[in-house]
Length: 187
Image (cartoon, rainbow, N blue to C red; front, side):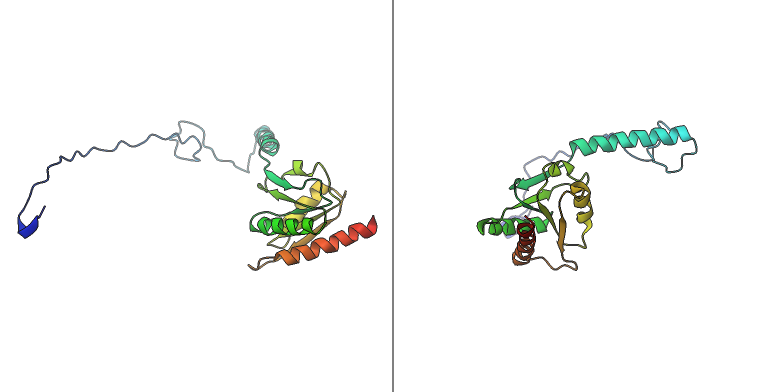
C-alpha cells in the first residue's frame, strides 16, 4: 500500500481464502447424462411396443387433466356484465380502461383477463355473458379458445391489430358500442 509521499505501509488485516465447495444439485429432470444409473428422461414419439405407447399417453393425459384443473389463472372485472371483453398482456390494461369508460357511460361491460393461456381458463366461462369481444395484438389466436368455451351460447367478436401498433381505448369503445347496439336491438 502506498501512503503519502511514496512511503510504503503494511496491510493490517489478514485475508483468508477458502476453496468454494460445489453445490450438489439433483438433476433427476435432466434428459441425459445419467451414466446408465437410471432410465433417460426422453419422451420418444416412436414407441414400438403398443403397451408402452398407451401407458405413456395415459400418464400424459392424466398429467394434462390435473394441470387443467389446478393451474387455470384469470381475473374478472364486472362478472355479471352483458358484454365481456377477453384480453391478456398489455392489451388487457387498455381494455380495462375501456371497461371503466364504457361503464361510466352506462354500458354493462366487464373484462376477463386470462393469466394463463394454457390451460385456458375455462372455469371463467361458467356464467355466459350476452356477447364477448376478444381484444388482441395479433390476428385472433385467442378467439378460437373463447369460441370453444362459449360453445355457441353467445356471439364472439374480434378486435385486433398486428405489426406492433397498439389498440386505443377509443377503438375498443367504438367496438363495444357496436356490439351493445346489436344486443339492444336483438333484445
